[in-house]
Length: 483
Image 1 (cartoon, rainbow, N blue to C red):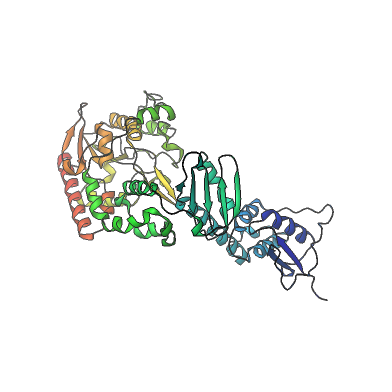
Image 2: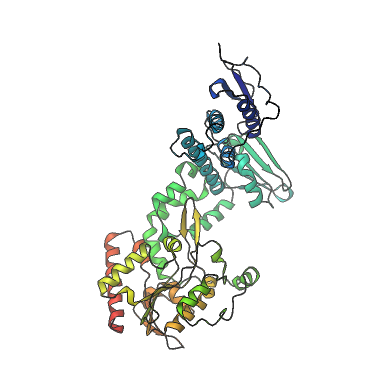
């Protein structure tokens, strides 16, 4: 008996509703995946005279995991022509294998997840690398961008640009489709060519200036940057021409940046803070009489917005009778997850150096100027961001109470942020390193670098020399306190 073939003709490459309707009718009639041909548009093929799609049996129902539906909506945007068959094959198997989606080693599930991951990555790249060029003036003003995605993601991504640029009139052109927003409605149209998009405008010079100023040479990791910004996108990025020189001069720029005074908040910062932040509490929520009690209070701290994205409050750690308090900048990625200060790469450098200097960490109280992890999500990674002056000021309340309860003989400020928190003003650490500053309340503050500074030095000889200077700083601290 010859098999009965069916041909499904979808309206477009991303016709998810059409695929779902056809797949439901075919699966409910037990049509095997091998008997179906999936096509986009009206093209002919070997089975162009195949049997029409059957109707779903009366009263028949089909339940599939929500996880599959969500992934299918993304995978339908993949460029692979076989994706329609892959999705139907998984749907067909789910009827007899209800736990199929949980089998990570299944080849179909592996392909599904890889396709979804590729589409998600392509969407992220489009959001990061679309660059608009202004055309027209006055009422004719609009912004046009050219982008070359790997997959059919324009429709799926268009709402993001509507939300982000709702007040602009813009058009995004790609080889597959275009998205046009006139301020009121979004229209998805046909594809275009690079020649349809305008060339650079004067605004690109402004963008290059902005990129140069936000480029942080101290955090440069070339391989990671190229992974996030593949070279195939460079030809459409105005800032791409700056990248080779920025990489070449990164070490020198990092040293110059460290020599400069920390950035002070803009004059309008106080008004923005007052409008958007909860007003910091002037007094303790209750009179904490011990560090454990103060730590419990800090768990619900809302003095600045950083608590919203952090995993948890990372409070200080160590004996309440410590003679020395070490203060760093803020918890990093690993500290945020562990809930403990100085357990990441910088913490390991700190442990090694104080051990070499003969200081026992169990006798120290170690904490940070800011208690919540501030970061920028970038793919699967969370990239550290320096806390601003308002966030440092908001968190100083906790530092002052830690010092008040422990009453140390010496506080060691590691890095500019810690010094700013403890002394209430910006301090040039590289110039005042090794000095002791006495506060109005009598607390003595020893100034040194943050151990993460050593990790950012790429030249091995320079890093080793800086580490040796840090050991000397710690030996000086030991001599001061006799620990």
